[in-house]
Length: 94
Image (cartoon, rainbow, N blue to C red):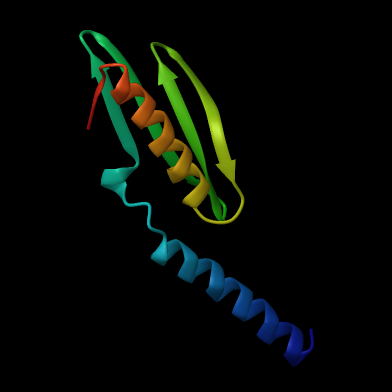
């Protein structure tokens, strides 16, 4: 492998590592629980490769409602929209 190819590979690997370290998704922010009486909805963002997936759980059913291949911003935006809609219908989210 040429020196240039090695440098490119090294730079790419470092950029992935840096992205993971700088990701704005923190453990405490991964899961938002919204309740209304005994009814509960859970919104969970999970890192996936360089992006994310947002899961929406209602009862025992869970589905991916958003995903991104580059960064968590899309998942966070969709989560905020869903959380806002739930709160407008009487859910309390934490």
